[in-house]
Amino acid sequence: MNRQSRHGRDKDAKIEPHKTLDRLAQTVIGAAIEVHRHLGPGYLESLYEEALSIELDLRHIPPLCANMDETLPPSEFRVEGGEG
Image (tube, helix red, strand yellow):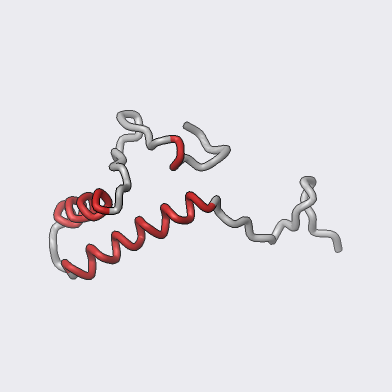
């Protein structure tokens, strides 16, 4: 049975993320792991947020606001074809 979509791709085929987005995700996850490794469990969320902000700054990742109406990420960090 042919499982291809109208675009000629297999519906179950995995689509790899853009290399820039993949690198950014790996860097952010690595920063979060580093914060957890240094602090461990049991602190207020605000402490983890501040520590993660510092760790991301050390890795040259710009801060993003939770309220995306206030600050938009630089264009190189936007997903192609996404809104914004």
